[in-house]
Amino acid sequence: SSKPRYIETRTDGPVGFIELNRPEVLNALNRVMVAEILASMEEFDRNDTIKVIVLSGKGRCFAAGADIDEMAEADSVEMELLNQFTDWDRLSWIKKPIIGAVHGFALGGAFELALCCDLLFAAEDAEFGFPEVLLGIMPGAGGTVRLTKLAGKTKAMEWLFTGKRILAKEARDFGIVNQLFAKEALMEETARYAHQLAKMPPLSVRYIKESVLKAVDASIYEGMQFERKNFSLLFSSADQKEGMRAFMEKRKANFKGR
Ligand code: CAA
Picture: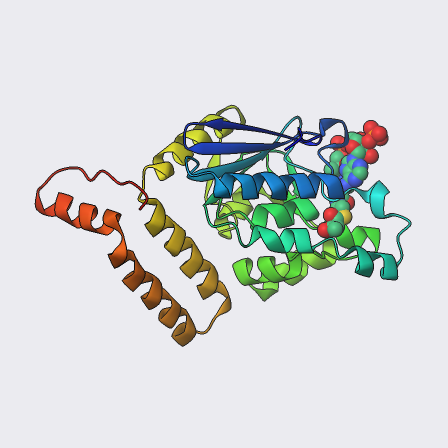
């Protein structure tokens, strides 16, 4: 595949890094960038050596949202026909865990992107928010849905009605963010965590991700049916045999992802 224009990717052993790289406009997400993010996520997802994906932004911040210049003159038929959020829908099919690392702003579409991550780490200067209302629009890539499911209706309404930014500590208190780090330590700590996560049995992690995402959206009964199938399936894996044998033999398991 040709070199992406608006992102940078690299790998470090089992961890694949995607960095938004359009710092002159605070990594404003244009459509090409979103397509590039998805293409590289899917590439990492297919790559057997990659176990964990890390997403972050270059420069002053994670990203200040969708590219406003690109949509300022659009009309609704154009937006409908562009159907640009199907790219975002593909994000939810990525099977490997995605860790978002946010410093500075994560606004609008970039907050939506952050909410698509499975784990979110943030620098103490991080600010999340949906300023769409201030532009006379509203979120369109899952913002009203994901924020409401995460933080509840009360705060979601307040934040979405006003565009008021959620500061790092508040984001942590509402469970939007897993952990905060000093700004200088964010990438190092995220990478360290990613490498630890990469050592976990990949099939377990894969099915846990699937089941948790299912649970967000399903009834308890439906979620549990789904969970049970995945639980049973893991008993066909070599890693289940290895994990349990290692326990009985009182040694460290050597997981293979099969
Ligand atoms: N789209 C396009 N360009 C953007 C941008 C965006 N979302 N955000 C910032 N930029 C550009 C600015 O225009 C500016 O470019 P110039 O130097 O050429 O003027 C450059 O990035 C630096 O930004 P500022 O000078 O504005 O930096 P600041 O520190 O003064 O302010 C900010 C930072 C508060 C984040 C401000 O840039 C801002 O409010 N940005 C827009 C945030 C926003 O509304 N995001 C939601 C977009 S809509 C959306 O995301 C909907 C969706 O889901 C599809």
